[in-house]
Length: 154
Image (cartoon, rainbow, N blue to C red; front, side, top):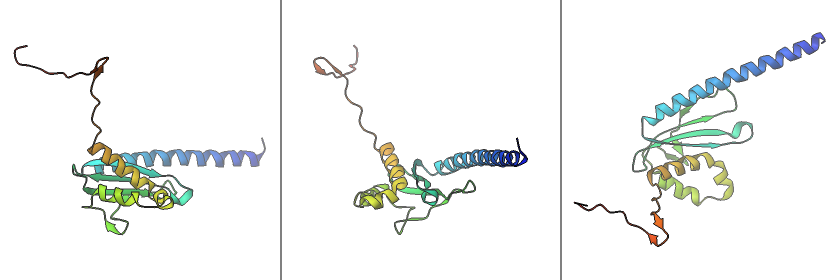
């Protein structure tokens, strides 16, 4: 192997190691951010993947009524990106706003705008599903729905 090939191999190997270390650091930062924001209530997580600089990961916390208590975002293209507080969305303060109001507003947007806010929509829909779970279907047998009741003394 020539000297130039050895140097190229070492450079590629060093870049691979740096990327791996950066990935581990980002995973630890993600875990810390989720624990930190979970202290403020239920957490919804959403992401938008894009080309280079248009990707982001958003964490939104809300109380049991769907009122946003905290939000953080990780945006940027490098492994050095960190989560930072998210104060405003669509020109309004996030803290104290309802996830349902935002979801209504997102539904009114055109397809291009929805794509831009995809991560926020995912996070708020996850919160909405957590706060309003679908009812369990009734157990059925061949004759139709059955009711399970407990009577005293039986």
